[in-house]
Length: 393
Length: 223
Image (cartoon, rainbow over all chains, first blue to last red; front, side, top):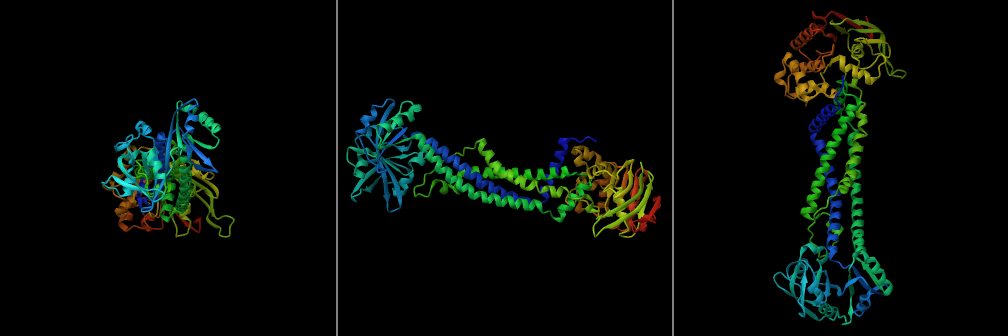
């Protein structure tokens, strides 16, 4: 009798689903644990991808080239007159002197990044603000801060606050604008002010700046220009945007890898459990298979049955785990793993993460979760497939 | 279509310390459309003989032919395929899957044949009707009576319309009334052209009027 291949598999799939339902407690337990493992691993993967994507977007605000001066391997201030030498390099569009540094708030343990830009540059800047404005030209003491900084300073509805100079004298500031949360990954701990205010705060003399931000006319020439600057000024460190991008990726990458390695042990434990469950058959299961063999099921039919059972559990768990991971990252900012990847600073950026799920990510999560599970459950299935039919007589 | 056995031996665990010869030089011929009863005490070898006839396993030596096919040297896989075509088997304890419905149990042998659900249902319904259990079609097997369970087992054995129906101690767990009911059903099946072989030591079976001959087995030998 000719057997319809597809109908045969549909029949076996139907039987497999009913078999899973009949043992719903055991299979449900395995599916839940498997979903949890996939949720953890997929969350890590999605969060890393999302952070990299978010960092990528916000890096568009970073300068093409950042120039810092080194002395004895440490960063020191840059004389402002270096701008004239740089301006002679063909391909440079603009050179922005910056004064920046860190201000530690002992009261709450927060470390603020203070960034001072010249008023001309501030007016030209296309910085997204949630509300307010940038500091006005000629107006001292005006700052733009992030929501996190405002909360950390305990400002609530107030707009004024003071910071201490190194000699413990105070300098007052007024908040005139709040950064958009979309840039939080870069501005989360930032206080933006006029260049002169920053010099005043850090007690830097008028001819010195912390670094120079260089923008180029043709982005394709960035590396060439960076090389020219290096040879013109050997005592400087020249950082391009692509180098900063690599640093971000490295930081997220090794942390993500570390987390993934830890989760791999959870996956391995689960795969061993699955193998153990698939290898050991209860008396009832053995009897059922013997009956099926007696009624005409062949070895390949039993293997097909086990395959469909395993793939149903695996795919259901995969979809559930992946969906939960997506919700975890999109709606809850990956709160379970964010501290590992983003850090434990007091001023954590608030991130609106849109999980970027590529086909490669799906394939990766599928490969290191579903495939080992299938192998662990289908290989031992051979033992059940060769149960002899006459054992039920 | 008949069954012929010639000088058949069946030895379990051959060559080992626990070797057992279950069948000794058994020769038997069963005519088509007849009903034969294999009678013997427990351990006499009647279940083993039934299993050889039922293509469950081949004999260790000797010739065995079922419906014209030599089954003595068929590999296990082909034996299974052949069994599914020509043999309907009713077990002592019925071996019905308790959580499946009556319909699903009856149509179980049709699943690996790639037969669609609609066709399976079309084949099963006349059998269920004939055996008076169509009203239990959707009931789980563990919610029906012993007599109904017996008829489910018979329906399942007949779903492929096999020419041979074998039953191993079918009345062992039934009362007198149900045992007689069972014999009435198999008598009708014999009348409709089936060849029936029953292994039993129950007098209700061996002494039934529709049994054509009784073969006595003792210690693996036909007496």
